[in-house]
Image (cartoon, rainbow, N blue to C red; front, top):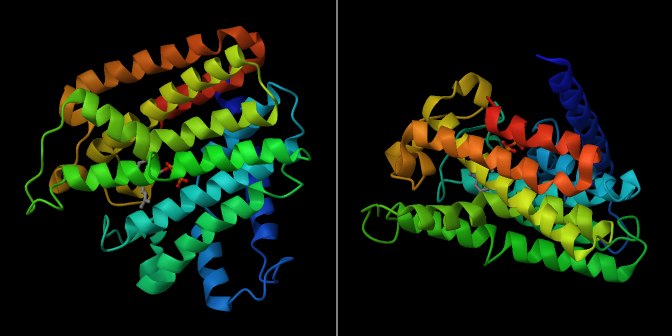
Length: 311
Ligand code: GRG
C-alpha cells in the first residue's frame, strides 16, 4: 500500500465511522418527533441492515464532493446517511428469495435469513422512507429549497427511472418474465441497465455534494461526469468480483451472474475488455475533476479505489 492509498483509506474509514455513529443515533429505538412508536423487531432489523458493515463509499462521495464547496461536514453526513439508507434497503430487497435469493451479505446472514421475509421487506421499506425523513430535516440544510432539491434528486435516483427501474430491466434480461429464457443484451442496453441499477445512487452521491454547495452549472456538469464514470466503473468491478472474487473477502456468494444469465459488461466485452473499460473510466473520472484542481485529488483516489477493489 502506498502513502496516497493509505491516506485515501483513512479518509474513507473516517467517513464510515461518522456515518455509522450518525445512523446509530438516527435509528435509535426511541421514536422521533412525529412518530408514534418504533416496533422493536422492525427497528432491530433496520439497524441490522444498516449498521456494522459496508464500506460507506456513497457517503464518502457525498462528503468529499460537498467539501469542494466548503459545505459543513455535518450537513454532508446527513445527506450521506440518507443515501446509505436507500443503499441498504436495496441490498435487503435484492437479497430476498423473489430477487437474488442470497443467504450472505457483508459476511453475515441476510436480513430475511436472520429475521424472516416479511420483516426484511418491512425493514427495506422502513429504510427507504427514512431516507426522505433525514433529507427533509433542518440539520441537512437550513434552506428548504435545497432540501427539496435533494429529496427530488434522490426520489428520481432511487425509483422508476433509476435503481428500481434498473432492477426491473435486470430481472427481465434474466428471463424472469419470459419463461426463464435469458436475453443477450447489447452493450448500450447493458450500460443503461447498469447506469440505472447501480450507477444512479453513486451519481446522486456526487450531485448531492453539488446541491448542498449550490454548485454552478459547469461545476454540476463536472460532478455529473465524474459520478457517471465512477458509477459505471463500480458495476464493472462488481461484475469482475462476481466472476473472480474470493467469497470470503467479498462477503457474499460469487459466481451467481453467469448461473442467473445476468447481463453484465464482462459478458459483453469479455474480461480483458471489461478491465480496459475500467481503466478508461478512471481516466474519464480524473479528467472530469480537472476544474477543481488539487482539491479533488481524494476523489481521483476514490475512482481508482472503485476500479481496484477486492471487496
Ligand atoms: C431491489 C429495488 C432493488 C434494487 C436492487 C443495488 C441493487 C438494486 C442490487 C444490488 C445488487 C448488486 C450486488 C449490485 C452491484 C453493486 C452493488 C450495489 C454492490 C454493493 O455495494 P457496496 O460494495 O456494498 O458499496 P457495501 O457492503 O460496501 O455497502
